[in-house]
Image 1 (cartoon, rainbow, N blue to C red):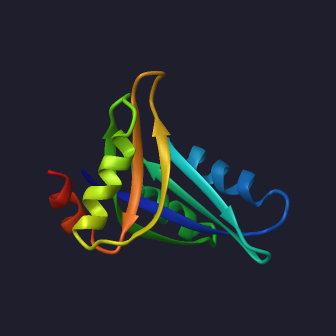
Image 2: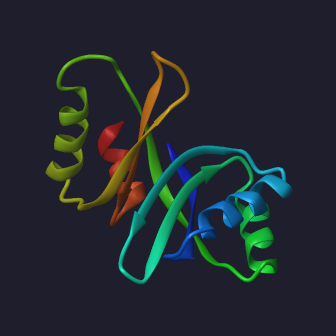
Length: 127
């Protein structure tokens, strides 16, 4: 399923993650999945939230730079090789996986968030 991901650029210094998360909390935005990466100069917080447009607006009002991108959310089965079979289908369709991270809602339910160069084509390849 294609979903919206919010990417937030953060200064790479103490307190900026806490402040951004506080803004989302204040806006009553629930975080469903999260990935945090860094460089020497900035951090990149990628989140799946229940209200991406409202989250982006709250962050913009507080001076943060963010963007909304389409990503795939793929439910994972608890079986050996299942993730490999998903990635095989995407790569066989000639689609590049740019990054991915896991999301879990319970012990037995897990999803993989996958950013590709063509979300619609990747979703079709998996159906």
